[in-house]
Length: 243
Ligand code: PXP
Image (cartoon, rainbow, N blue to C red; front, side, top):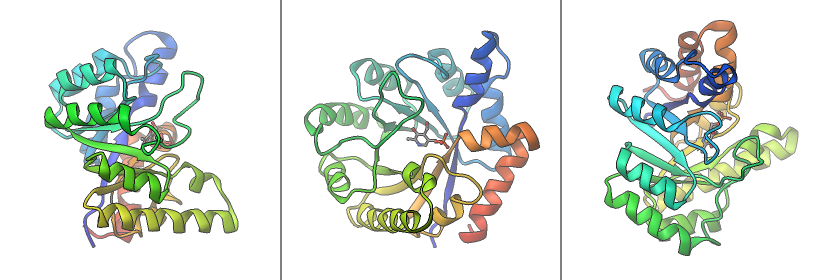
């Protein structure tokens, strides 16, 4: 089995900080704690409305961390300019609507190929590994390959919210999409809504090499502390995929 990396998304540390407008809790300090506890990389989403992570957070993380940073962003000219100047290890292109509470679905790579292609090319030319956040839909996966994406992150939100047969069907879709991502020569990542119960089910799909997890870990950190929450998630993942 291939190793499975854990990317910890620290957006919601910034959500809490911004609630009071000060500097505490510091997302950079959370990133350091997550890495020390076994995370492989740090994920941050710079949204158009800057509701959590802000430009200064991106710069502080880039300056201070040697571990890979995965910048989630919309495929806009503003974000392309920020990313090519920042040069994080990776960018994950996500759809973004101002009114949504969180990223609600995958990108329509097949329908928006023309507008995505130049952004993917510009990020790639800056040496950034580009992934596309997609629903587990083979048509979208094939579009990502045609667009030259190096990775696909499969949206696990529907799976995490479903129960019973619907959950099993969604897990089958994720496994099939993961096989296609891998067969097309891209890395397969997964994320959204994962917790201690759902992460191992994704870890059992051998083609998945990275999980990006945020909201659950930051919430769990209120009870157990962030290092303990990250260590437990690592143990849960490693229980299925020994490194
Ligand atoms: N991956 C992507 C592309 C996302 O947009 C998000 C949410 O920002 C996550 C992973 C993490 O999701 P969650 O916070 O639900 O763990």
